[in-house]
Image 1 (tube, rainbow, N blue to C red):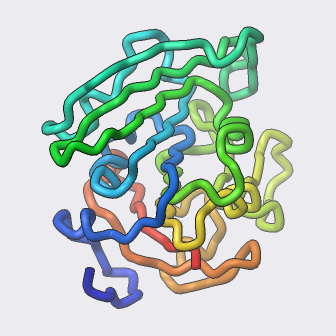
Image 2 (image 1 turned 135 degrees about the horizontal axis):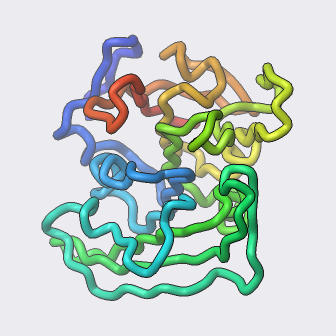
Length: 232
């Protein structure tokens, strides 16, 4: 990919996604809801293992079939409960649920197998329990919020950025940064994130440098503008 100028009008073109340099590692999309197709548009050519997490992924019928590229073939599909005990949190409406995971194995036209996990669980716990230090190559947190229907999980913000007294808020950038591979790409709309992610200029947080790569068009939520950043 040609080197891009770092300015606020810099948009990726559709054909450039496949050339996006991604290190070896997994993808994690917490609170991903209906954003699966967006993730596959960006990373279908470069990631071999996708993990999505959202409390809306309930039941055995949940699938990535409407989000993966049309030329992928489903090889296998498995549903299991992640644990026997139930969990609950404020963003589940304090209703208890039993964590579960649907694991699908897809084959790309080039013969490569791709794993897609759809987890119904607490997204902040999946981050810590399912991902080792330096294991995430691509991370995406977009279209989330703090009001009803949102998680109030600030995956891309540091506790030092906390500006409210909401006891529910969690600021998780330190844990995310620890689990990112050097050179990993993150996708954020800047809403629940460090203020630097709105600047479109390089900045330092959690003792690492964050470098803007460009914006992405055609988001599912019109008033949100996702952008791609690289952890250097």
